[in-house]
Image 1 (cartoon, rainbow, N blue to C red):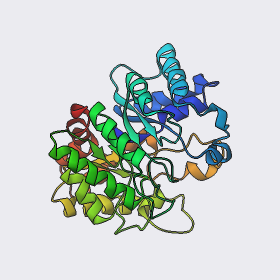
Image 2 (cartoon, rainbow, N blue to C red):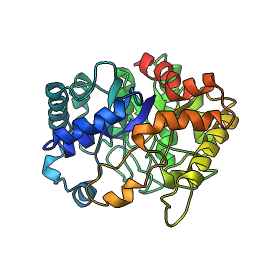
Image 3 (tube, rainbow, N blue to C red):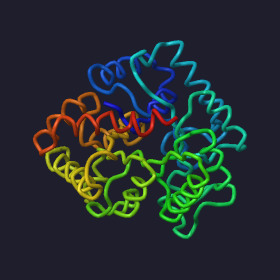
Image 4 (cartoon, one colour):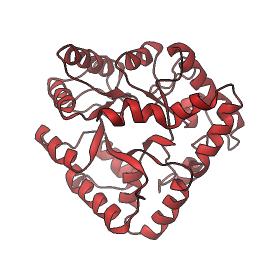
Length: 318
């Protein structure tokens, strides 16, 4: 299966002094399970990076960090040759110049979230100012991303920024260009009113541009509740409900993919994130296949959701 949103690069960066443990973990993840996807390096605001990850602001250098992670992956054979993947940057707060896109492209980046949860110089985040949309610099960025054939991940954008990006991408499409948009880790807001989930209209807009929605197996995106249980049965039912809802809304599964957004590598709040996901990441493919078969999806539908949709609608367009 392809994981549309796995913060693998951040995991490696945070555990660069314990690569033995990284190799052990990745062997579990990749063996007969996840065989590709978008592997992300993510950037919050400087305060959040310090508070949540213990990373100081002076270390926030996209190109430097990408180079370091790339070196660790290549020198230590962390990703097997049979894995099909691209790099993603989640949050471009620390992109110093638009011309730096050339260098991160050369380092393997083919997907970006323009914003994370907070506002930045390019636009508004899901937990930021609702009135803030795509800025003038953000419009320039989108045009450069489209020209470079870098996919634009709409998860984490607030509604105004989302629609500004969609509108601009449609303008560029009408000029003969080929924008690639998708939402890597968001579910249906109609079922779970999480600010990071998508409205029906947003989901339809992504389909109209040929994108996919990565249905994310994270509990707060499946059910809205104060405290999350360690028992996963009700979350699995809710997760399938999201997939069925989007499938019915779009008339099929052709624009649906899967993402884990696994956060178990967090050093802070580790006990919380241990039970954050609906599935254990190392068994997700087997568990999902069984769950989807038991809920009325056939093998062709499951193949599309697990890997074909992402391969045909994202990978082959890059």
